[in-house]
Length: 221
Image 1: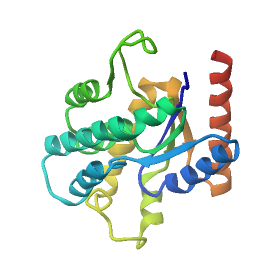
Image 2: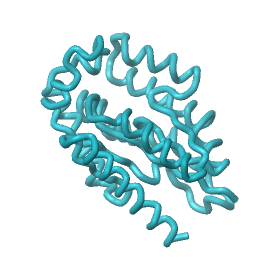
Image 3: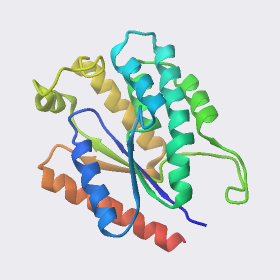
């Protein structure tokens, strides 16, 4: 049976995720891995429609969380789980950690409700391959940690901001704290990258984190 690899990329806008996720996709492809490159919210036609609503339409925090998890459910069913079953390397620009950071940290929404939604949406039923109930989580999460004030400078004038990007720096301080909380809760799968350094240095850190993860995975096999 093939066993894929699920790597998520997290961080606030301006941290450099997009640049390095593309680079990592090329690296895996050069090593003869099949790669599924995707994003959240989004990744399927339905989830992309929900993404547009979440990024542009005013709504209360519960509605926002429900739409994000609805998009995630479709994304898991239609893209992520089939890709992992094929043995692909799945590289996802944000996953559930972003929900706990943005909705839980930035919005201050109830973490207990988010945890319940996480349990519902990401539950993996027991099977021969998965003898115990579990949640689908990334095997490795690369967190690009960047001070929000620095991110704001990088993004200034880059594009018309969506309703998240238009939030004040204080909002992103809470988002960063949300990421830190998740990292503390699940340190085994997190690789925290200092994104406040030259691009080449960030890439070197990303490569080192992925290499260390792959080596651990091979030793455990």
